[in-house]
Image (cartoon, one colour):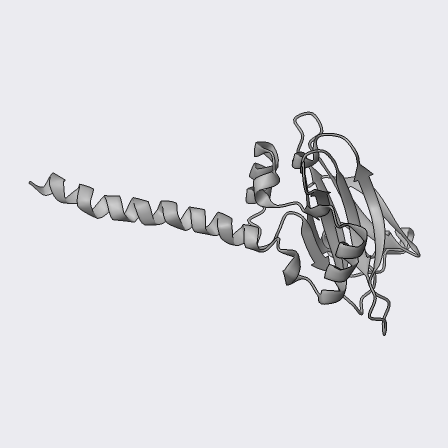
Length: 192
C-alpha cells in the first residue's frame, strides 16, 4: 500500500519542475527585449538596424544553447552590458540577427556614448552575411579574467570589461575576446 502514495506526490512535483524550466526559458527570453535597453540605444537600433533583432535563446543552435546554459547566464545571449569603451559609462554589445531569418547572418556591434553625450555611437566589431548565426552568442566579463597588469599595459587595454564572442559551430568551437585598445577594438582567441 505504501507504493501508491508515491505517484500522487511525485506527479505534481515533476510537473512543477517542468513548468519551472519552461518559465525560466521564457524569462531568459524576456531579457532579450530591446525595450530593456536605454531609450537612446533603442533609438539608434531603430534608426540603423530596423530589420534586425537581438539574438535570443530560441535562435541558438543546440550546441550554442548548451554552451549558453553551461555559463549559467542571467542575461541574454545577444546582449552584453559593461564598461567596454570607457570606465565611466556603460556600453551595450549586441549580437543582431535578421528579423526575417535569424540564422542568415549577424552584426556584432557595440553602442557607446562619450561622457557627457546623450547619443550612442555604433561600432561594428564583426559581421557575417551567411548561414550559421545560430552558433554565436556574446557575454561580457571583467578584463582581469584574461589580462594581467603586464598584458593590459602591453596591449594598452584600459577598460574594466571585455566582450566574449562564442562560436559553437561543430568544427569551429572557439571564443574571441574583444577589448578596447586606444581608439579601436581588438580581438584575440582565448582558451575559455
